[in-house]
Length: 366
Image (cartoon, rainbow, N blue to C red; front, side):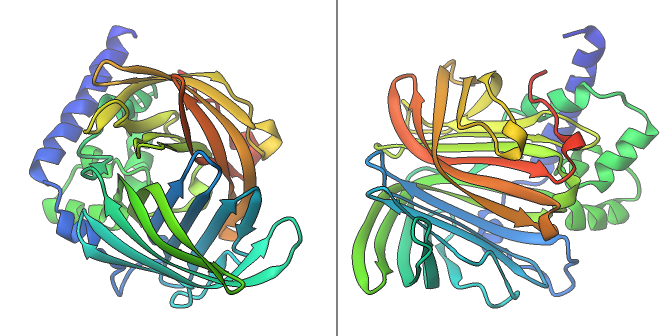
């Protein structure tokens, strides 16, 4: 890294750290967030829950709410069978998945009452689940707990000028609080509409799932994700999100995203080999191909963390569904993968996102 880029990185890091100290994480407010009555159409409140076992059973779902619609996908696998939600968009108050925070940072309750489709036969099956998520470790918040250098590197790599900062501050990259300047009240109002908030947490699923009248027990190590703020799907270029879970309930997380003004923003953490979360500090992709918008079936990368650990992560996708957003302007290839992490077996989400405009697909290596 050249001296100029190093100085720019330190400027961003100092800004992020300063803002974090000014705004301590309020778990109660974070967990019980609901969309305000005057929220614009780009404001989003999103929940992801995923439980997996290395024997091939997984229950993974995302439900997200906007003022005018709700988004949903569900994937359930067991004994080689894949069931998915046949619909992915509902009215704002018509989503068949309900989520409730019972105790902030510790306990969530989720129910589903609707249909699932057997991907092999196309059969539509009346289904439902009743699941409790119990946290195993504290929340990992992207802005408060991640190594700030993981976000600063992408910003430092770009050419800084008035246009760059104007776009960065008006975007939904979750960085405006660190870069914004001007009248304090005006800045505060902009931040409330623009900032993204994003947390992850390791835990456990307990409950039941019913498919076509047959009920079975759900008992799986699990993770969850809660994010809210401005999200314009068409603003993103592409992204990768990996979330494996070991049989012990240990997790590893990696998020990589490219935006028009800033490329290769990355975040991540792990609690493998420990009982606490450690932030990712660097990564290197060894095997990846956008595969014409399908994403690669096998991805291999090295990940370094702030506890001094390095992990070689290999994911092999086992099943996948296409999930379009914003009329198809952006879409997920949402999959479930078997993982090998330094010889440790795991299973969980493998997600690739692509803008409809393939000219905007970028690489992920510096």
